[in-house]
Length: 194
Image (cartoon, rainbow, N blue to C red):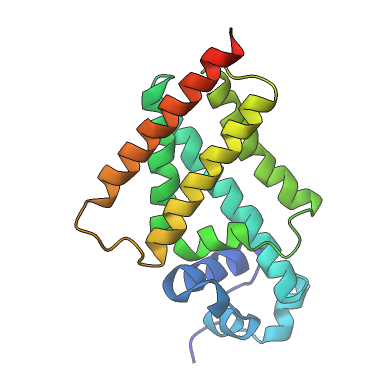
């Protein structure tokens, strides 16, 4: 038998993320996490509130990781269209590299939990700030933020499910979709400033 690994919240979440990314979000169970850590499942309750608590922690961790990836992508590019392309590609690439963790961000047991809301709020405010640079304000920037999230999530999810089978390169399609979105928000920005 291999030696026991010290279990703490971070180790537990990291182990769950590895399982989720390799086998799928719903394959994460307390028994599997405990087995990978070579501990008994009841020991996990010293750090988490059951599977519900583990999923919450995975969602928070995933949202923080996604936010960090978006910040890094934006930091390397100037404002404007290149920045929007960079964050769009970073978002989709995050979902590609971490399919289980990405799904965890959408599967929080209680999305209205204050900790989950705070983690998600950083991403929302990031998008609001980015889209405000297109001259959007008020309700328009919220509509555009929802639109950005919707098409990026839709693209990432459909790709994960193997739904893009046509011969066109998926990255090329993503680029065209982002360009189309930019054209739309430029039009919205023009109307806002009339």
